[in-house]
Length: 208
Image 1: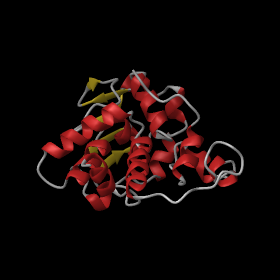
Image 2 (image 1 turned 90 degrees about the vertical axis):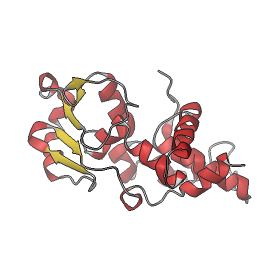
Image 3 (image 1 turned 180 degrees about the vertical axis):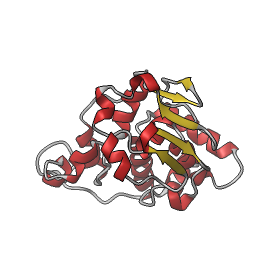
Image 4 (image 1 turned 180 degrees about the horizontal axis):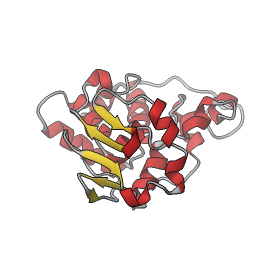
């Protein structure tokens, strides 16, 4: 399974924005972007003025890196979004939001999407009662995502039990903290997805 294995803080510095790829660390003074907001590379490098293509490219890269998918898979998602009725950009974000690893992250069971991906890959989750270890599994409204009963007492989930009880989940999800179970109520609307992303620039990038 292909995935990015390099330093993730470098990605935030490259995009010039905090992508919150390291969970709680991103909210502390240890955040690399807070200490070194300049782009990676030679010391003292400055951000140059970018044109329309540069803006589109950077936004595409930002969305791809936030959801932790590689280029080929991201382009396949775009083609799926383009073939569906509705607004292509919103369709793209909706597909990404309904990935199993993102649902686990949104439920608060994992600290970051990378953490969620690891937990799913290790077989800790079931969808509608069936064990699933594919992070890119596409969830649908009505699906029930849960930590398998045999895994709930394991170390990764002991630390999050209290956080689940006090955490908040998006409106398109419901959470049963006692049973480590979440249900997808409906497909997320645009106002329920990350507002800091400009999906129209991604559409323009692929429509060149």
